[in-house]
View 1 (tube, rainbow, N blue to C red):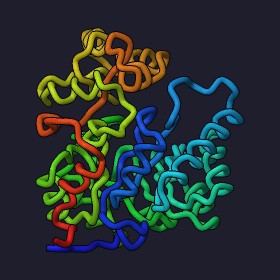
View 2: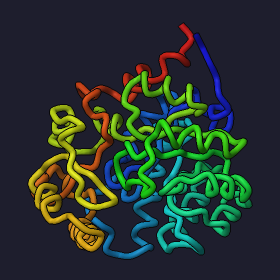
View 3: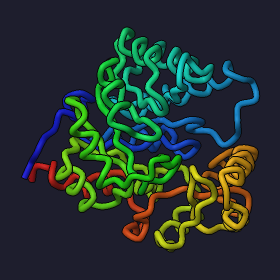
View 4: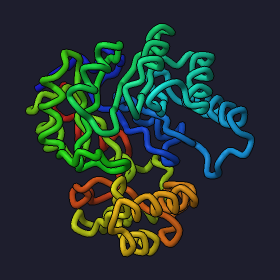
Length: 323
């Protein structure tokens, strides 16, 4: 049975599924594949490159411009860019991203971080559409983001991959809490790897899903094949906490971090170590588990094989497809 939600209307997409803005492991090919298949592709930080920019914001901006233009050469569908949102003001890289996006005609943004009134107001005043994800989601934060002009809220459960919410509330609990707090559409994220997760999200009141880990194990994702096979072969019970903020599949680097992680102080030291090697760059993009972590959601048991983004979207969105 074909169903609809407000998400498709707001974003100009066919199905209410958004690919997560994952650092290092998105690129133009993947973003376009998701958008062409009816979802919303999102270009994450450093998308399309395998080395950090050495020329500061100027180089970062030009790299972003090239990747945006490549996306536009591969699809005429909607796509979004990621913006990191500090507590106040504009981070220099977020400013560069936003300015380049406007110059290139991009109007959809996934803002991740804190409820930043200044950023939200400017995004909206320049005609942008904002999908907002508070790092640690709260009902109050969702209400504030809506009041400032956010168009869609992402409710992130502790089941997710990437930076973990510090309230440690699972997807099944946080989604209805945020749904009840706002009148704008809510996307569910955290452990959604098959159609059962999608159906559960909608049962909880969500109007769409924000999916990361399942798209990592896609043909178009630039993540290393080593990482994709690692996810397929691992289970949720294998995952290791390497800090309060992140968990990883059990590679050598992750095991070393997990062995030293006991206190908040240990967590801070481990996050510095992860940042020093380039975050997810070595472990996930370059496929070097001895040098970096591989951050995924807790439902990886459900991922059995590499498929195209189109096949993944078809499986997850089967209830939205007219036969």
